[in-house]
Image (cartoon, rainbow, N blue to C red; front, side, top):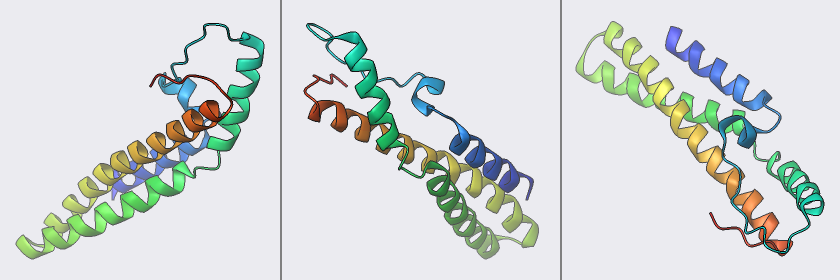
Length: 124
């Protein structure tokens, strides 16, 4: 149960971040040759606004719940209720990590596509 609480806390904290990309250092790599930096910065902020529509916290919570349920079933089939509880906690943490990775990848895709659509050459 403690691991599930930690997973939920991670989900809520991640969802509360203003710019996740800034926090984790996952900025898009853009060829800046001939680019007006002020215009690029304004476009990047607008693209981040679009990426904010990706519900990171929800994706983490769903993955944590799925991981916990699957691990609990597996634990119950091979052990007792204590084993099921321990594995459920581990499954929640593993699911949270997987869900966070998927959500962050999706955010980066949205930002990259948005910048590309505005004429920037996104390299990553």
